[in-house]
Amino acid sequence: MKNYGYLERTIARQLDRFPTIRRTAKKVYQRLNYWRYREKGFQCEVHPKVKLQSLDHCWGGEKASYFFGYYDKTPWGGGDDAKMLMHRVLGKEVEIVRVCPEQGKRLRLGMSSAWNHQQGSMTQWLNDEIVAYNDVQDRRLGVQVIGAGGGNKQFIPWPIQTVHPGGTEVLSLNYKRLHRQRPEYGYKPRVSNFSSDVPLGEDGLWRVNLETGRAELVLSLSQLRRHRPRTEMENASHRVNHAMYSPKGTRVVFMHRWIGDEGKFSRLYVAAPNGDDLRLLMDDRMVSHYSWRDENHLVVWGRTEKQGNRYYLVDVRDGTLRVLGEEVFGQFGDGHPSYAPGGRWIVTDTYPDKGRKRYLLLFDTQTETVHRLGRFFAPWTFDGMNRCDLHPRWSPDGNYISIDSTHEGSRKSYVMDIRKLLNEYE
Image (cartoon, rainbow, N blue to C red; front, top):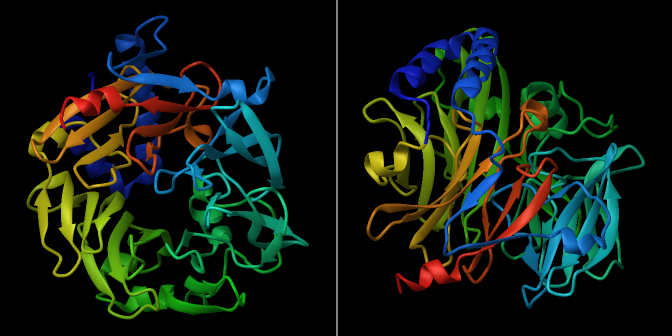
């Protein structure tokens, strides 16, 4: 793996306070490295005991640009786990589709203009019979709740960020603020119920009851701005993002991010769903991606002053951290990690290396070893706002992994069968 080394990462960190210079230098440096390390004709390579299959057969021979979305959700659902949710790109909108890979069939559930390439429309299962996705209706941004068979639609003017495991409530945030500060995660359409300049005291994380449609602001940006303040917060733009309920819904993890004169900063917080018991877990400038292992522990790619950028196991009760895998795991850099059912395995991906290859990795927490499931070419056509991260997601039974990729030259979703590989370690 032609990865970026310690010196290169150190220089990148030093440029954090100069984001425009950093972005320009990064683009130039990546292009130069690609011409040196590229493998002509390479598309992908998978582990010999792993089977990779696209979902092309579900589109009846039609050429389709399709994907699922973010790594913190699963496309599988419907009770028997034989059905999956997908986004099909149709110009400025996406078609929300339920596919049955075994039968090669699909069912259109709706259309949405509230989407992005990183997370789609946050489409997900509320339970075995109900699907939810973000949409714009009558110039209002909100969540569309619909039966998995396509009936019984209900629109609530509060968009999804994360859904409680019980399926009865969600946390919501301002995607228009996100679009101004980080367009990859926001929505472009103009709406009447959200704007990018809502006062900090009136913006943040909302808790929304799906049965009544009522919402309450549980954590405001001004509250986070005042919590153990830093001088770098002055004259900065603030936002919250990437909120996730714990597996039983007793806690919520999220990031408070701001960008100002000193560059970009991120903090990792955990709180009760109503905003109580707010705890700051990581505050050394950089936190990126994370997911829950159980009610009390997270895997986090972040930074500590003592040990640098690593994958950490964080105990949310007292904030203690432990490095996972030391250099064996951390050498691959930032990715989108998540625990398999049972908690033994972590799957994660990487950003493109010097040869534009993304790696899919399986980390064994018992032996602290890493297995390379595959590597996938990332064409320059799919870069920046249009990029396609692998965003690996587990199936509910832990036997399959879903990824999005562009290694064949178009945006597609794939299913990876890892049963043969896992059987060796039972």
